[in-house]
Image (tube, one colour):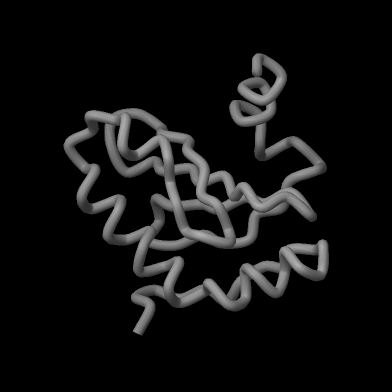
Length: 108
């Protein structure tokens, strides 16, 4: 587990991970090719949060355990983002290679 935490703290510099989305100036999504676990970085509050989402189901296990005041905003935003990009994420996972997703300011 310690190795995984090290990777997450240094994800910007890890060549295995790709930045696939950057939106609302506080959310970044990283993916490792062939891995169903996406890594989200949220920097909108006083501290940076890193958590995972299953690319196939949209499940975010860590959010149920966190006590952050921005939690409902984060969950709503991530769920909206996932619904917009779900088919593209599954297509990327199936192909074994994540691509950068289109940048959208408001998911409309």
